Image (cartoon, rainbow, N blue to C red; front, top):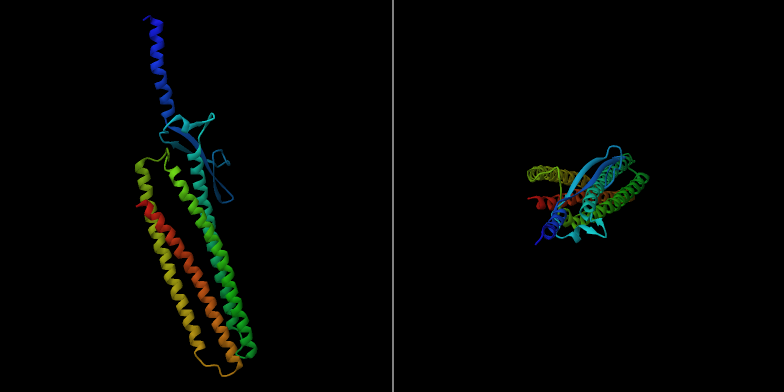
Length: 270
């Protein structure tokens, strides 16, 4: 065998190895994080002057076909990572809106309660009291519908996020070592436990407030109606009880559903 044939044979052995190493080497892609009008956004391209670069590494692709399709790098993992971060930001927006709606509902019902307390103890006052009680019930029902819509959006986003986890698990952020991720998980677990405790405390507070207010209304309604004004007044008390029960049921449900979501996240971290 001459020297030229030897070189060709050596090249045939080495070249496939080099190509294989090129494909097996970890692939890196860039994700940019920035904030626009208080909303966190994620993109594969710089999305603002304050864009923060996050490097995502694809782990050990099995075959070249998984990496290159028609000459383009497969960015499925990166796209899933970006979408997951955007989902987290969207969920927080919906949760903030739920908190705002809950506060507005409380304020409107409290204002109506003050108007009700100022009514005269006669037939005209009793009729006005009934009208206010109906308003309270309507306010509670209206905000319940608005809050439930936000809750459904959160559930939809969480379901989408869960579907992306398989893809996300095949990628990792370069800046985080395994030890760093373990620390982050530990910190998140403690945050979740504190959040659950705080929300459970709010549920207990809402329950106590509802029981106390309903008991006060029942005391007022315990007197048998002696005339038309008393009968109308009792009807208004019944409507108030319905409105208060609906309001607190909505507030308690908000906290309970968030606790359920936190418990699901906690199960994945422990």
